[in-house]
Length: 333
Image 1 (cartoon, rainbow, N blue to C red):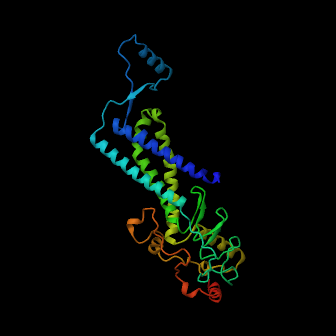
Image 2 (cartoon, helix red, strand yellow; image 1 turned 30 degrees about the horizontal axis):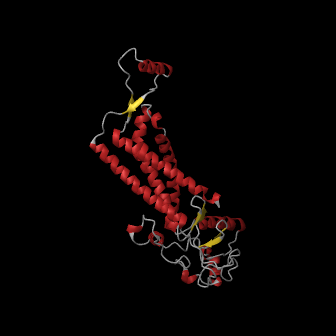
Image 3 (tube, rainbow, N blue to C red; image 1 turned 30 degrees about the vertical axis):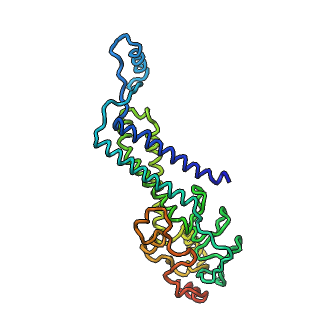
């Protein structure tokens, strides 16, 4: 049980560290002192000063490296302060929605199947085309697009995958929250990169970054997470617009390989009756089935799912109801 939550604690720990560095190590000092908030400490004029001698000794031992620093005495302009305050406010807003999305994807039920469910109205059938699907482990009916998660030990409606980083399955009820979680990691990462790039450039070039190694470290981490999560978010955006899950994508690839190797095609479900995805209703309808029809709620982690996750609209529902019709379509593929 404890191991299950370790990835979540790791995500929260990295998030807390990133928040601390951006707010208290970068933003607030920049607002108080400007972009370059460290400068070389000036030694006293007295030639006999012990401090001056110590500075000279350190400079001789490490030529080209400044050993002593003091806070910058050049105040930033009001324009710069205003821009930093706006960036700090935007960062806090993005960070709040990011945490909200993460909380929702972790705590929400991904879409459990009701007990004693009878899938009489579903389109997907057993491998032999006879009868409705039943879960051999749950001993319960399986609605369309439902899969059993061996980690959660239950069937999940429109299951996409099990994600250890959220300690939960990603399915019908929390898929929007998962996508927003990825999306806001990407946005926060790119935002931090954009607002800390000039600081890193100026300070690293002047060998001042050693005074605050956490800011360059944050910049590097955000490059990894920002662009990395951007790839994942783009992948899931494509799946949303196609109305397809990760599991269905891999199933489709596996069946294509099987057909090519065996020269035959065995019907398992309505998803296999045509070469295209029968759940693909067009990009807009696919999008609104997850995010709803109100654009004001699209980027907020609130429930906007359309339907119940048990019966799905298809482009061919009216002609694929019986095994005989599925067999006809099989021969036409």
